[in-house]
Length: 444
Ligand code: FES
Ligand SMILES: [Fe+2]
Image 1 (cartoon, rainbow, N blue to C red):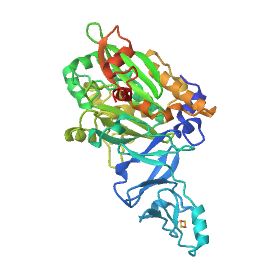
Image 2 (image 1 turned 45 degrees about the vertical axis):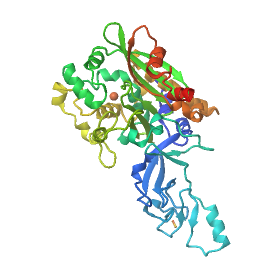
Image 3 (image 1 turned 90 degrees about the horizontal axis):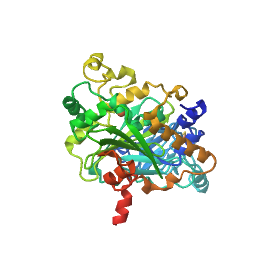
Image 4 (image 1 turned 135 degrees about the horizontal axis):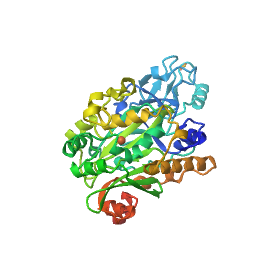
């Protein structure tokens, strides 16, 4: 449970809110690179953390993310012409490049006076980087920090698949849903026997390795015991369920400041998945979804599966809106719910979206009753609220300046119950916090 004040602190990300200021100290996904498919293509309107921007790709292929209103008399540059190294306002022809510099002002006589005015008339333009099929922006003060070394950004393009999906609720409850691995025993369960469930859930990549025992363990143990480890970029959240004999089935996720989560399903060699929750405003967010395999390219069949909705990826329309969404009750099928699945909603991503949206546009955390399986959620809130308060007190988040700390993995392991989470992590990833960069540096 949170006080009303802390719930507000957690969920409000506008420019003047403490959490909004914290988010602005980190790089933020603004749109997919593919939304700006080529030089001088159609510009795209954006809302990020409650602020309006316009994104365009210039003749050289560079991306600009700028304030949308022309400094002359405020016309919307969305209607502008994207031509020859800049966006030109169609009201009176002023033109700006990707850095927001005015490069033409045809309403004034050419000469030094015009050059001076042009020099002073800038559009607010954000620092931009393209990495991992995503256009990232830095919306904070001062010089932009380095991009975080999330592993999907470091692998060749052939080894990753990236998508985005609209979520119609506040970012924080969607993020909590991603970190809450206890719900797997319920929300995503099939009512069929273990063999059929494994086939169904293998479809969803929740149990990637297709081992029927995994489903049985998840089904039979709805009370995973959680252990949380702190590290410079965030938290390791380990949930242990009873396996056979004296073993535990660990499903381990990662929270990375301020808004990234890595999922817990992958065994060694399997595909890894992650999500980044980016507030559009305080009532909706874009979820950037990524799958990568550090060891091999993804196959065409895998890509086709992700496009159709698989694992973290939703089945969406061309505007990245999930086909099963708040407006059509996620196409909930009550017959299906009686006979085959716990929710009657098709798709793991859609089941998550349905239940997270159902908490309200902004979940009321003052009325919760948290228990032992919510420890990961409690620690997530504590960590990010602390970071927001620290920044308000003048201490910038150290994680923003430690890009290598983001090169971590999450996933599954089967281990004797005598092993601690640190030992399980070392055996599975070679480091107690799943830090892959550490090993690469050591062996380099
Ligand atoms: S309002 Fe844009 S050039 Fe006049
Ligand atoms: Fe889920």
